[in-house]
Image 1 (spheres, rainbow, N blue to C red):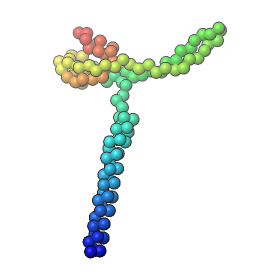
Image 2 (cartoon, helix red, strand yellow; image 1 turned 60 degrees about the vertical axis):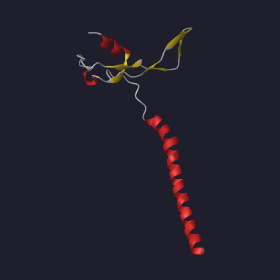
Image 3 (spheres, rainbow, N blue to C red; image 1 turned 45 degrees about the horizontal axis):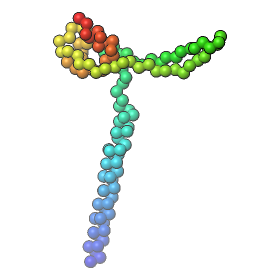
Image 4 (cartoon, helix red, strand yellow; image 1 turned 135 degrees about the vertical axis):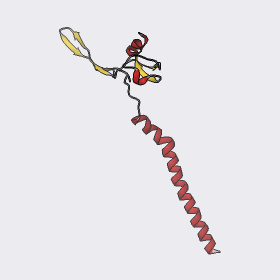
Amino acid sequence: MNIQDSSINEIITKIRSSCKQTIEKIIILVIIYPVINKWFNKMPRMCQICGKTSVMESARKKLMSKYNPTPKKRKRPNLQKALIPADIKKKNFKPYAGQKVLACTKCIKTLGKD
């Protein structure tokens, strides 16, 4: 009877340890992975057609004979999702023919022109 009890206890400890490992894996997949994915796999804030990106801007305000430096601001391009037609003739848009791309409004405006 003692032999069976010890083998049963070994089996139970093996099951518990394997369950712990699977629970840890589930925690990593469900909780930690999306956070890391959010940090490192951000889509760039850049126009896919012309490559326009954000720009740092600073202004100097004149206050009584002295310039008052104001904090810097980051100006980002106005990006929109746009569907590029398959039969496009412009060379800048050809690689993206028939695709949905993230494009700045300037590129979308030129897309509408003939």
